Image (cartoon, rainbow, N blue to C red; front, side, top):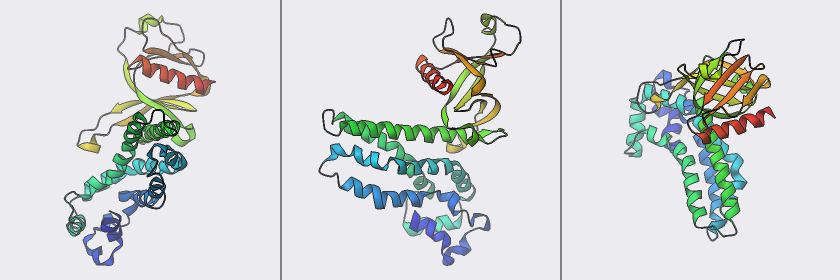
Amino acid sequence: VSQGYAAEMDNPLMAHLISPELQNKKDILFGNMEEIYHFHNRIFLRELETYVEYPELVGRCFLDQMEDFQIYEKYCQNKPRSESLWRQFSDSVFFQECQRKLDHKLSLDSYLLKPVQRITKYQLLLKEMLKYSKNCEGAEDLQEALTSILGILKAVNDSMHQIAITGYDGNLNELGKLLMQGSFNVWTDHKKGHTKVKDLARFKPMQRHLFLHEKAVLFCKKREENGEGYEKAPSYSYKHSLNMAAVGITENVKGDTKKFEIWYNAREEVYIIQAPTPEVKATWVNEIRKVLT
């Protein structure tokens, strides 16, 4: 891909096949694939090879390079831009010519998906290795490597959702780290007077996608797009946010193990939030508690 496509975009002999709108878009189309390739070629593969005789110790190899694996996050964040560019120019003569020269059965987009598939495969490999390395010397490292890779996957997944937020005026980066995101049923009570919670629960809930940052929690409405593959990726239209400095939480709501409350400005606004499962609720409550304390 680097030699047969990306480098060809700079080849003067191929220039006449590239439409003007596609010129100078190499970085958008390929993201930091080159960087990922060099990391594997120069660093990670060599490290792996030193463990050929001691596969159970390979967890160390991951732990030593864990920072570098964040280059995948950058790649995945760029993926929607790359996809949309590819959709515009997929039938370009330039790409057809490159594919013909390489004698590839599949078109470029199949290869651009490879890094995304690669980062998701590592956790499966590590889980398998753990299964057969229970009492080995390297088992702890393997477990730690798996936890770290799952952390990177979660960050990649969360950031893919975050870049789909529309209509937020400020800068999302100023809200601190994105800790959690997910879909919930939400009931709300804005009255100054106290309505009984059971009266509230009769009304139909709103479907909201929540993004929990260190400094604020965002309420968004999910919009499904119609289309194929990545075009079906949802977008989230921003509704409102609560500053974590003024938030309080009630961890248990009577009669439902999946519900908790977030309230604002000393219960001036109350949001009853219903998670899909008690486990999801527990994870969110824990994260919110960490932020508040």
